[in-house]
Structures are given as structure tokens and as C-alpha cells.
Image (cartoon, rainbow, N blue to C red; front, side, top):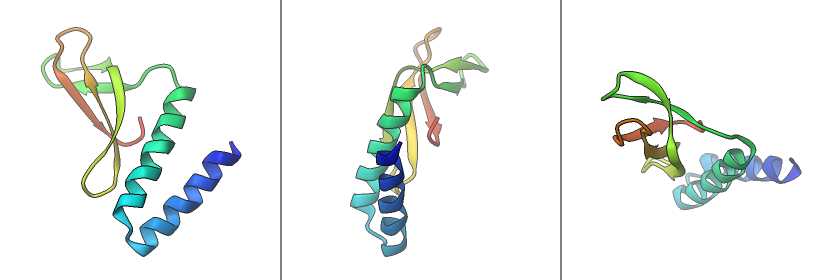
Length: 86
């Protein structure tokens, strides 16, 4: 828990100073830490038109530095992309 607080402080400093590369690295560490504490991530499958558990969910950082989750739908194998920490 202390480690997460440190990374959140570093993330806040990176946002204020505009350091995108540092922000991407910190977001990835926070996402990995978050996914280790959670079992499954839920996203919306456009093809099934329903909320599904994201299979093979991996943290991803978008170009603007925001965190996201990439994976596939377990039913139809369509790519699912969820913006946010999951």
C-alpha cells in the first residue's frame, strides 16, 4: 500500500510537469499493482452487446497518458478496450 502511495505522488508530479514518458511508466506500474489485487476486469463487448469479463486483460497507456485495459471477449474473441483502471 505504501508503494502505491509513492507512485501516486510521482504520477501527480509528472502530470504537473508534463513528463509523458514518466507518466506512462508510473501508470503501467499502478495498473499492474491494481490487477494483482483484482481477479477479473469487466468491459463492454460491441459484438455481443453485453458486458463481459476481459480475457487476457493487460494494462495499456494511451498516447495522452491515460491508463486503459486491452483484452479479448471470452465468448466471441473480439478485442475489448476499456479506458480507465478497470
